[in-house]
Length: 140
Image (cartoon, rainbow, N blue to C red):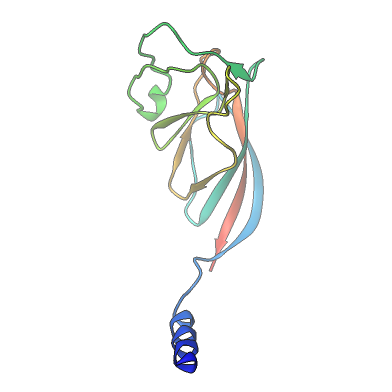
């Protein structure tokens, strides 16, 4: 029985293939005034840091007004509950700030696959000043 299980395991694992290896290509630093960035085909980005203006801890917004921070990417206006360090990845706004209670809103790093669009915005209260990413080639 043991031999049969071992044989089955070897046969099954011989058909499995990895998705590829990562090969370092370059480091990118994107400013919030740069155009939206699209991860090229055959690449993957690892966002390592998101830059703040002058603070890293943000309170909740009490204005209740919808904001249009990412019009260059086509992200619809929304009410942003927390201030601080937003990026939009594939039209989804994500906050990278630290809430005033001490909780990190989004943990870094974030892996971004080929074809994804990353958009920054220019609001001094809500938006990231930029971000850094490591670009890797996908090697079969």
